[in-house]
Length: 281
Image (cartoon, rainbow, N blue to C red):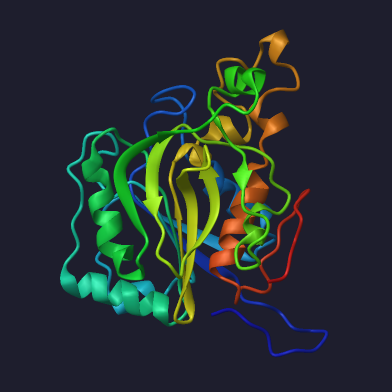
């Protein structure tokens, strides 16, 4: 997928990501909390080692289209992330997507954009072959710290599986990220649960599939700008929230680095500028 030919002069080509789907409409400031932080961070902080394309209209998932990307992030697969209608994919598209993963592609899926359980349909259509599937059950994150939850405008995800060697790196350097109203995830017997809510609902599930990897996350709160930089957070200027804002309590960049690096271990040159723990799988 991405590699070098060795030697001191080795130059890695940038690896490409696609974010497919509509942005969320909720966040700390509903309809005023864009989800561009991830794309901006990758394009500006990866020292040229990553490039992101954003598709808010439904693309056709052909082998030629998929071959352009090493990582695909599936957001809300709908005409409107809150109300639908939800996209559907042909059998040929689902087969092409499966083949892309089995041949080394990495996919990260997100849910929780809508209260309508129909949102899980297209996600399950594309990753269901792996045995990982979203359920219609809504899951609220726990509140690990009341002041943090009040000031970040989100509950927290804090239950990490740090002992399974297959998924332990997904929580490297991460204590909290925001997790609001997401979806439960079913894990197959050969899957790996990396995080849970209240010890009962799977929040982050990964699986090795052929040469590729599938990683399902239950919520979309980790995409909102307010949860990264604090921009748009209604509590940003509240003196009582000093030290408890998202940029203080959440390790969003580290979490996203972990997820991207996990689903695409072949991207050995993927690096970031900033206080990130860079690990090798």
